[in-house]
Image (cartoon, rainbow, N blue to C red; front, side, top):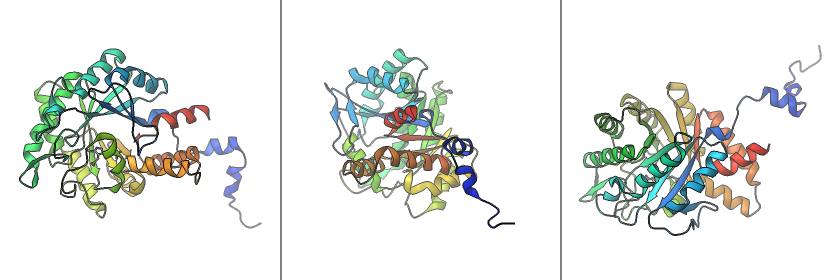
Length: 326
Ligand code: PBG
């Protein structure tokens, strides 16, 4: 017998053969598209550090969601930028707040043609830029929980499908679940930013959403990127508190955690490919060092291959376009 007997190249001989044995698939149905909406804005504003991503006025939301649904993307993730910030983030749970208005407008115009997800956090809404309420020089966990619950309920009243707490306060899932249920919103689901790491990859987002902390950093609440077991415990805790979808964030430097969460838990796992991951690809592509389409495809496939069931990505629209064409 000639050597080698196993020739793996046999299944790589033609495009069709490669298609036949392709294990991981990627389509627009895997994506959740982030949308930034800013109160009192008249025209779209480009985000300097995130090429092709914009903050939208409420008036442009129908067009934007129309484009997203036409591309076959099933869900959006809403982030609001309010005009007024204060210490307790009151614009975040105002029934007439920018996020609430956006949710009800989309619900009215699109019915159930799109899954409306909304970020539940305080940093865009507090004068401190922190994800919880500051007392003294600390971010107070339990006062923050009450506020997060109020935000979730006000978004539910507006018609949100899924609330997505990203504040990393302990007990946020249990508190929000109870508040939703007590107010009759038993069908509103929770996708928690379960293992949200203290990451340097969020820098461009802070530019996009005006939410950089005014003092200190987020190390007392976000997960250290050195601790994989702690990340799994965050995921497990959210599951015990009744979460519907867990998330690992960021994605690309955290593929090991996506894979581990997928193996360990029988619950949908989302990955959030964050602003810094997007900005790196955009910058290198614009310099001509990499091919944007090819590298985006490879990154998104790798996140799927690691085990993510869905990906929150700023490439949602552009990738859906090239996936349709190929
Ligand atoms: C804040 C929030 C952040 C992101 C999503 N929600 C930033 C932060 O924690 O500082 C980052 C998302 C991204 O970088 O794309 N609640």
